[in-house]
Length: 205
Image (cartoon, rainbow, N blue to C red; front, side, top):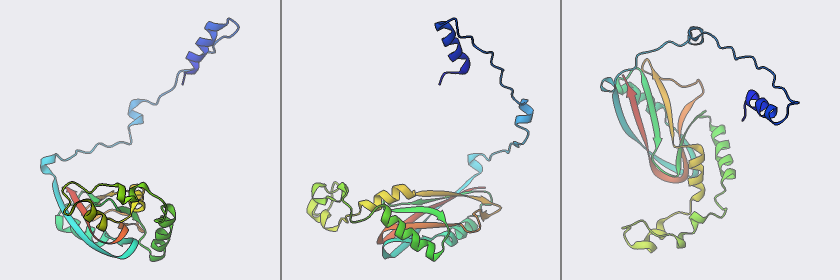
């Protein structure tokens, strides 16, 4: 937008009846005061950092949507890594699963299942589910017909995966995973039952 001074100057140039009022300059706090609360910390160089990547496996037995608490496994990976300060990145490795942080309370997880089904109903019409109009991936054994026989009509699961998100990052401080009291890192299965994998990378010093 145009600043008050610029706008007033423009009006003044159009008619002599308008006079621009002087604008008081903005007052800024002294630089030292503005940054007094910021304490710089030396960051470790990349050569001094440790990176440990692990793939967790989960068989999701429930049909449709289900939630699975990964927190105990992630805490164990942090402990075994020997890393005391850094972070953990958790990645869903599928297009019909998600990763989220929330409370792993059974009735809440039931509410999540119901809510997600309302958000993207499986029975709605989706272009992605027109399997007869889609081609098999290049080199699929048996060609298009064989691929279509095994391909699920699961567009709703893809949409939910995009909305919920595919990764989370959690700090590691003094060798501990830093989560809120009621927070858990969960895999969200959106098209079960399936055999699933989750990538977990612990990084730090």
